[in-house]
Length: 283
Image (cartoon, rainbow, N blue to C red; front, side, top):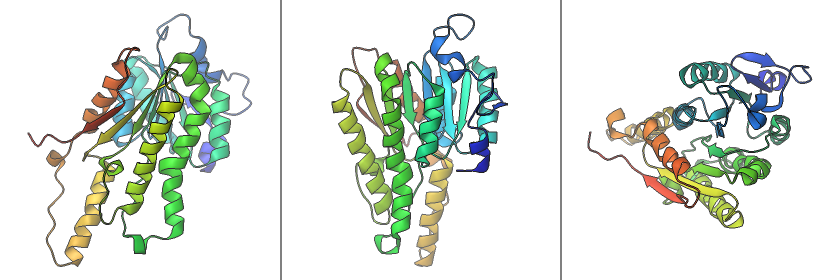
């Protein structure tokens, strides 16, 4: 947990609010908006909101939701909040936090004091390439803590607010959650675990909270570029050639955000439970 995030747990549109401040309002009125431009907007919370798929999802949902954004870096969150408020008129609450810091996450969600939460989208995660014999136990724990344990923890903290709104939880998974490949045991294990978490939550909360898992294929994000760079380095070390990274071989993050939008827009009598989305190879 960075000192900056601890010093400024929550802030809205670039104005810092510190713990104990007399002017602090829980969720900045998200749970009790009765008038003005934010009236009757549903509330969405997105993790990993400042990069890649999370950024695209946040921008899309802000068109008709008030937003709670979680990521590590306060500066990036504040810049995004200002942009979203200007673009869409959304009320935006930003929460700079290390999602693996259980105590801080619990404290922050308690301070938000949401009466209801309409949409929760889990986008935060980290890649983890490496063969099994090259991965240290500490690396296994580090990746599983962020990609799986922190997701379960945050979901459990927000379930009361989701139940009150009969809300939707969206898990951004991966094709790696459905199939494994050499050199990616840890990432595949984390995503397989995420699938099991979502499937169990769906059955436990059926009739109270809708649950969607989205399985994207290759997406043009910084994570995908890093993964391809690792693969290319391995190929060159073996004396083989490696193709250059081409954004055109991948989906855009906005395409995945459109899949999230489909789940969000589905009426209350139905739920998109599992959705795989892949590059079309048509461009």
